[in-house]
Image 1 (cartoon, rainbow, N blue to C red):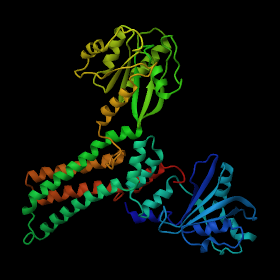
Image 2 (image 1 turned 90 degrees about the vertical axis):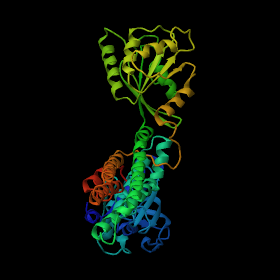
Image 3 (image 1 turned 45 degrees about the vertical axis):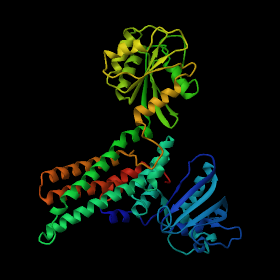
Amino acid sequence: MNKEYVMLERMQDTIAAISTAVSESGIGIIRISGPQAIDAASLLFRSPGGKKNLREVPSHTIHYGFICDPDDQIIDEVLVSVMRSPKTYTAEDTVEINCHGGVLAMKKVLDAVLHCDRYLHSDCSAKAEEADIHVRAAQPGEFTKRAFLNGRIDLSRAEAVMDLIEAKNEFALRNSVSQVRGSLYHRIQDLRKRILYQIAHIEASLDDPENLDFAPHMEEFGRELQSWISCVEKMIRTSEDGRLAAEGIKTVLVGKPNAGKSSFLNLLLGEDRAIVTEVAGTTRDLLTETIHVQGITLLVTDTAGIRDTEDTVEKIGVQRAEQSVKDADLLLWIADSSADLDENDERIAALLSGRRSIILLNKTDLEEKCGEQDIRELMRNDTSEDPVIIPFSAKEGTGYEELVQVLKDLFFHGKLTWNDEVVITNVRHKAMLEQALDSLRRAMDSYHARMSEDFLSIDLMSAYEALGAILGEEVGEDLVNEIFDRFCMGK
């Protein structure tokens, strides 16, 4: 992408939007950014004494006053923050109007900003310069997009801003904050510098082979190349754990009717969300809830009890239950320890075959008719792995802590902690890392084959460019627009 070209596109416009939630709250913020941000705000702002001009105030100061309409009628009492470029979020002149958080109040203030040109011809604009001042509504993510295009942040940090806003648990929040602060940027940038240094060394030896011979450095280069491959492989390995931790583990509850699936869901939620009765087959459709358990996000789907049935509606529910199993990250089989195993349990065991699963031997508070050994014997026919079985009671809550620990071990291998480790949660970043890894491995193949340095240089440059795409170097305009279009308005 010609970055300079994109920067010119509408970058001379001054933009504005409500940057807080459009709902009743204590405070609402209208953000204005662009070359005429301070001029526009000065047309609307009235200080208590009527003498303060926002054009003349120092940068990064806050001023009490009022926003008025063209007839000089007060719209709202406000605090106005004036911040001059380049030390602002967008690296442009920025004004933030802190008004009362009523929906109507925020919209009226924003409307005043967007139509500030009306003030130029009103009686109350005597102090304003008679010049064209125009402010348009910001597009979704346009403030952060300008921060990227103006070079204040790279693309990985811009994407982390949206991840921060959408964070569903503590891991996602901390990882996003880390990337906003540049953890991924610095890791990628360091790797690119090392690759570029070797490319330059190779190219210099190719241009002047009589004075610069790369051959004596080949062994050292091989070790360096292997370290790059290991670094990229390590980042890619974090992506699956990162996705599960940030987005949530798709968890499907399976079991026979009245095994306790809905009771288990209610236990996790801490409320009676799913209907629980003594009547078998109460759950007919899929019920999905997002549940946060000690830093883990579970997207839990309760399903119809799996059994042979002649009831048309229940039969559809069973089919949907079996279909939902295919897309699950985790299957939780709620097995009834107070009932004997039957052909329906065999059907469920077959669904678990080859899938990540945990078996909760529920109703341990009742007389046992089915134990762990019975389950293991049944599962032995369908899987070579020894199943994870946890004695559980949804009624009394026993086995809950053990379940949480098993979840952490099963998905995060005990290694996902709140430290400074770079964890890849973005699908685009993973794709670029995989491209870079392919190029580095091709370079390693060329190294082992003792091929010409030209081949090394070509593959190293491909890896360098793929890593650069993570930071926003050499990416297309369409991709930039696609990334920022998913941002919320006002950010």
